[in-house]
Length: 250
Image (cartoon, rainbow, N blue to C red; front, side, top):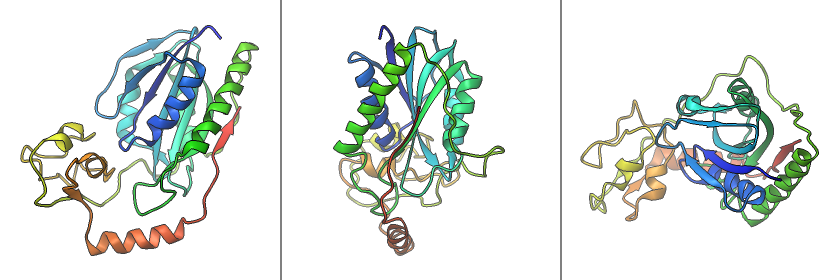
């Protein structure tokens, strides 16, 4: 397959990046990466390219700010693989929304809905795991075969139009304990620029509760160790304990 490959993703905690890159690597060992988590990007792709898109599901929809970040990425009959990563509940209309969005921007989507560890609780911890990424790679091989046959047909994916309400972040605002050393990593890597110059103050009107700061803090200073969250986490973990499978659409 004589295509150059690019992985483009919004991935606050890294799950969407893992899957998008596993697929991209199978299609082309020397693939490029565009990270839209903290910035917008302008890029145009022609029909000789393949783009692998990845994004998480927020309440059954794409995160609204990611949609804005993606506005500058356009195709010209460019084949692409569209992936949404969800935390074992449901992806609802997010995959359909993503395909519709990219079709309008000049891409020809093939799609997948993938399981990732949920941001909250202990739900499908460690996913995507080695087996998931191997499954992603096998899907990519099928995509390559389809494209090599000149088949650019778009699959039907689940979802409804109009889309359900969603696309917003959660309501839990991370806290900071005395382990903070003011390295500023959390502030620099916050997708919403919600963390103040003191590296402790978080604007609740901007924070989307993606917990990127918690995952990235080298000192474990950012946390959500409060009774309200712990109770919710335990309930949510029990509710979503039965694992779901990845879904692929060719």
